[in-house]
Length: 133
Image 1 (tube, one colour):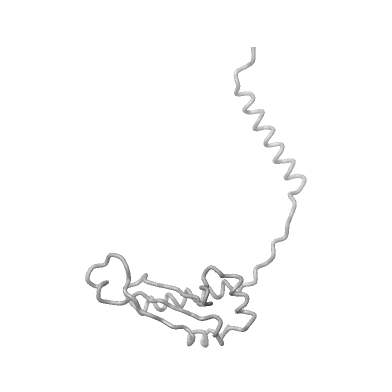
Image 2 (cartoon, helix red, strand yellow):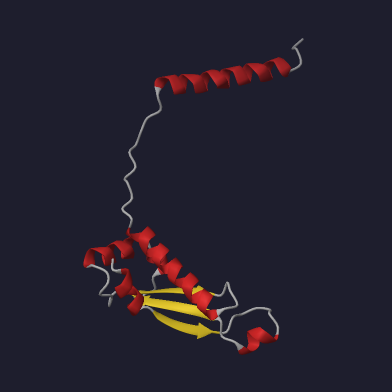
């Protein structure tokens, strides 16, 4: 993953933020929409692209475009920085190779301990009942 190359492949679009905010919101486009086409990327290898398709399919559209939005700040520049940081974070998380889970069995002592605690609990509740006559 070549971060400098990826940065050149990003496209940004400034849009008006939604919601309340008064006069400032209605005239200034501070919300940033970041789009990145994975298929045409030169900064990612073929293996990395495949790994991204498998690891983050819910964030990628049908056109193989990863899009992010940011309207946290009232500044367009800050929103752009935040969006870029989020983009890199998503890519790094998506490219991590997850360690496969190994199935394990509980130890005999832990099983016995669990059964003993269940027995003691049931005895405790048994003693709370009214005596039978």
